[in-house]
Structures are given as C-alpha cells and as structure tokens.
Image (cartoon, rainbow, N blue to C red; front, side, top):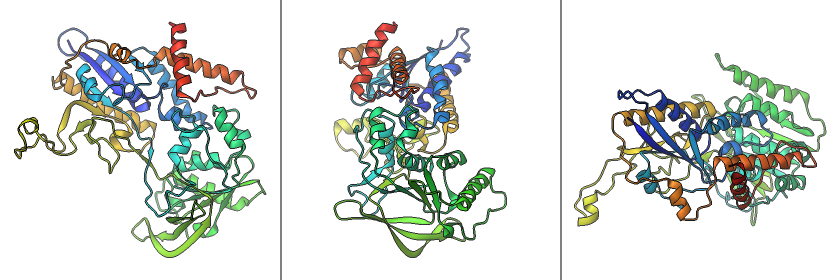
Length: 481
C-alpha cells in the first residue's frame, strides 16, 4: 500500500492548490494492492497566516479577487492538509531535514521581490519597489509600519496590474478605503499623503498594455481623481484584424476618458505611453525622471526615437515585475528568479562535485549534470515558472507538478524518508512558535471582531505585527481546541 508523507513549502494559492490536488489524486489512486493509498500533507509557511499574495499582495479595494480566499479556506478547512505557519525553511528547519522526514517536498514559495530596473539613479532616496509598497499597504508583518508619502508628484514605471494597483492606491483618498481591510497604520499614512499627481509610464503603446479591462475600469471609478491622457500617445492607433475583445474594451475605455476631459478633481492620474525610462535624476533624492520617447516598430514592439523628456517628480515606484527568492538548500536560477525544473521536477542547476571528490580531492569527476531531476523535490507556482499568469494558471501549474509526483510515487522513484516522528516534535524542541489552522481561525475571528467594532465598520482590521499575530493565533488555538 502506498503511504506518502509530503511537505509543501509556501501556503499561497500555489501551495494550497498543490496540496488539494495531491490529496484528491491519492484518494483516487489504485496501486493494485486492493488497499487505498494514503497521503499526509504538511503545508509550511514562513508567515503566521496562510494565503500568501492573496493576503499580502492584492490591493485591499479588490474584494472580487480576494474572494478566492473562500475557496482556499475550504481546502484547508477540509482537514486533509495540515497548516504549519511561522516556520521558515532554512532558519527553523532545513530543506535537508524536510527531505529526511518526507517522501517528497514541493516548493511553492512564490516571488515577492521586485525585479531590478537597472538605470542610473534608481537607488536614490525616494525610489521604491512596488512590491515593498504593496506589502506595506497590505499589512505585511516584515515591512516598516510607516511609508513616506511626502511627494506631491509621483511616477509609477510599468503597465501591468501591479502598476495600476500602486497608482490607484497612491491617487485614492484614504476616506474611500475606510471600508476595506486596510490596516489602521496604513489608513493613517494615506490620510496624511501629500500626493496630488500620479504619473504611470509604459514603454510600449496603449495596445500593448499588460493590465486587464477590470483593472483599468476600476482606475476610472476612483472618486475625486481625474484620468489624464495625452493625444499624441493615441495618434494613428489601429486595432489589428482579429484583436481580442479584451483589447477592444481597453481601447474603448481609453477613448471614453479622452473625450470626457477633466473635472477639476483634487488629484490626477496621468497615463503615459511610449516612454522608456533612462535615468532617475536628483542629487540627494529623486527630483525627476528621464525617458526616451519610443515609437512602434514595423516588426512589432517599439524602438527609441532619440527624443529625451524629463518629468519633475519627487518619488518613483518601479512596477516592472517580481523576482523569486532562493530557498536555502535548493538550486536557484538567479537570472530568471526561479528554481530550475522540468515540468515541476526540480533539476540540478549546474554540474556538482561528486561525493568522492568531496572526500578524496579534485579528481576531475563531477556529479549529476545540469538538468538532472533531483529525486523527491518538486516546485510549483511562480517559483517554478516565473511571476506570470493568474490564479487559473496556478491551478493548472499545480496539476502538472502533482501528476509527476504521483507518477514517481507509483513507479517507486521517490527517495524513501529516513527519519520518523512528527515534525512538530522537532519544532517544539527548538522552541519554534509555529501556528496552526486552528490558530488562523482564531486570528481570522479576532480581525473580524476588530472590524466590526471599528468606528468605520469594516469586514476586518488586519493585525500587522508578527508577534501579535502569533500570540493571538497560539492562544486562540487553545481556546478553540
């Protein structure tokens, strides 16, 4: 009979989907013995709470997107996956130790760092990564509680959904966020904001944006904010034959904004296209942003025109993508920001010295060649394929990885675990203050109670400090049990 123990590292959508798909796959598996196969799944998370970027990477005024939490909650509440939070692999327990205790380990740690934008001046004070700002307004426990919002004119570089989230939160009045789950410290920071003008810059044209029609429409629904477009960015634009309905909706939205003009709102959100960033200007801090004007290229994409333009701004946010973070003990492709893998099977990134070389000196022999699968180690989600795609892609991605894991298990290709016993015993012995699913239920109830009792009635008020989250979770779990 097949009896598996599997660890999943990362409790965002990718990890939860992988666990749920694995549980269902094993339940339906017939190994020919006449007895049902079983799997015990432990889901490790470095934060005290589950859900990853759904909790800490989605703007608080996106209730439709956050609705995915209901589905994820049901998967974890079913009891087939054990949540173990506030445990960092590489600090509290090593990847090697997990591989000793489990038949397979799935890495689903996502991508939370900002991708680099290598232009002069990008490190000046007043220049920020979008991911850090998103973490702040979502109440991530590991970022500072305060954020400098003393600039009147702000630039956002990027034309994706994250860029629009950042621009919308910067332009939005705090009063219009009071009904959301935005933490109190964030609400106070936004109420004191000096922002009057937010400029969003894209290197390509309006027909090549990466955001969705929903994101764009939400931008135009922000109270007391005018959308400002430049006619030259829309000159000679023609939809290609067979253009998607999504692109047609985006272009119609732009046209509607161009024709309605401005209303005299107290804040303005400017959308600029065909601008490629060249440098951030300033002596001691950000003073301006320099661009080269671009134009459509005959073969697709854009080319530089040689025309340089400077925009006076006092803060810059780069929203040019996310980049994965290495997992201690696992191979990592720093250039792509992913764990190297073949359809979810983690692979050797470079040829490694053989075990013999480690003991008898350099003999010229090497270990497994780059691209060789590492037994019992898998990856899924953004850390597997890079930070692209939506929730639906994450689910299909997990299905591919789990299919290979199950195939390896039935073929007897997994590396057998060598250490028995519950991993919680190890964490207890090290005084790791881990959190549990009952603990999350307690923290969830606590945040909802804070929201109900707030002067502005809200669905919840997030608890931000890590220590407080852990205390509420661990003491509340005792009450629930």
